[in-house]
Picture (cartoon, protein in one colour):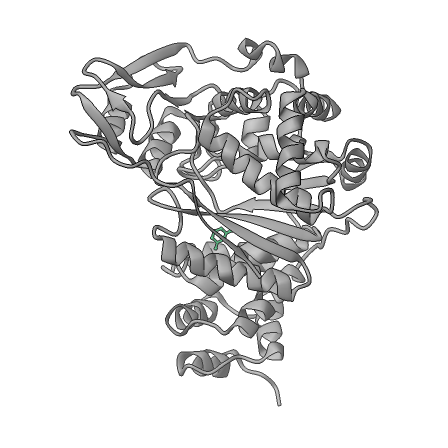
Length: 436
Ligand code: URA
C-alpha cells in the first residue's frame, strides 16, 4: 500500500513507533521536496512530544546521513577519529586537538563549520591566520591528511540536505529542543563525514544547548548509542560551559590562546579538556593501549614542541602564514583594547558563557545572521574565572574592539559577571564520561 505522510503523522501523534521504511520514506521525500514543510512541521511537533525509540533515532540518523554526499575516507590510512563539540564559547579545542592528536599519528580529516550566534566556528578562527584557506577540494584534502596526518576543510554544501532543511524548519517551529532531533541532526553529519570513530564533547551549563547535566547526559547517551549502532566507535565527554573555556573569546584571540596552549602555556581548563578528549582520540585511533599512556604521549608532544611544529606545518599546507606562531602580533589586531574594571570587590561567582558569547558577537566577533561579516580581531579576553578574587578597580576583562564606543558591550559584560562576598567552588570541568 502507498504510504501517506498524513498517516505517519497520526501514527507518531498517537505515540506509536515509526518503522524503518516509514522513516526512510519521510526523509527521502522531504529531501526531494515531495513532502511539504507544513506536514513535516506537524511531524516534528509530534516527535517533540512523543519522542523516539533508540531504533527510530538511529534510523532517522542514517536516513539523513544518506540524504546527500557521503565522504569516503577509505583512501586515508589508519583509523580516522573525528571530534565534535555541541557548541561553546571560547572553545578553541579543535585548533589544539587536531595538531596534538595528529602528532601521535592519528589521521585527522576534519570538516568544520562557521560560527553562528553566541558560539564560534573553527573555520572562522583559522581564517584569522593570513592566507589560510579551508575551501580545498576532496582530493587535496585526502592527500594532505595522508601526507601530514591533518587537514581541515569547510563543510561541504552537498552533505545531509535533509538535516539542512529540517534544522531550518525546526528553528521556526519551536522544535529545535527535541533530544532525538538534536542527536540525529548532529550524528547524521558526523556519519556522512566518514570518520571511523567519534569523540563527542557535549557541553552543559548556561552557554550550552543542554543547560543541565541530566539533559546533557541524555543527549550524550543518545548520540553514543546512535554512533555505536552505526558501527562508529563513539564516546562522549560532558564538559562545563557555565563559563567560557579558557580566557579568550574571539577569532584571532582564540588562535593566539591555542598557540599558547600548544606551547604548554595555555589556560588550565582548556589544556585539561584537550588532553582528556585527545587521550580518547589516541586510544580510539589505536596509537596507545590505554588512556594514561595516551595522555603521557600528548603531554610529551606539548613539552617537546612536536605539536606546535605540526600546527605550523598544517597552517603552511593550507596557505597560512605560520610565522604567526612565533609572532602573534601578525594576527589581526583590534584598534582599541579597553579594560572592564570591577565596580566592587569579592569573588567571581557567575560568568554567563552565553552572554559573554553574545557580547563578543556584538563586537563583531560572531554572526547575528548567517550572512553577517565578522571582525576577526574583535573579542574579549577574560582576566578572571569563577572562584577568583577581585578587588575594586581591577580588570575583569579586556575588550578588543575596532570601534571606540563600547558602552553597551560593557553593560552586557557587567550583567553577565556576578561578584559575591563568598568564595564559590569553581565548577568541575568534566562532569561525566559516557561510553557504550
Ligand atoms: N546542532 C546541530 O547540528 N543540530 C541540532 O539539532 C542542534 C545543534
